[in-house]
Image (cartoon, rainbow, N blue to C red; front, side, top):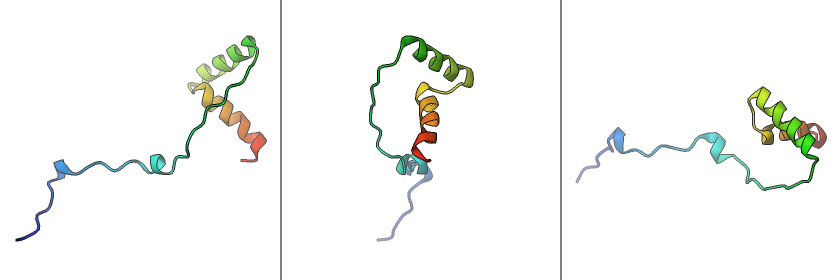
Length: 65
């Protein structure tokens, strides 16, 4: 009995390194004035990023990252 190689079409795709090293996400709810939320949303749209990314980027300054 000899070993046979799998055909390339049968190989499973490996997850990207960023997926493997990604940290678990948690939800944070906060109350802000509607006008402030609208300014955040507008700023995110102008930069073509999500509001989550916008807020995370701003908060990294305060968490020494």
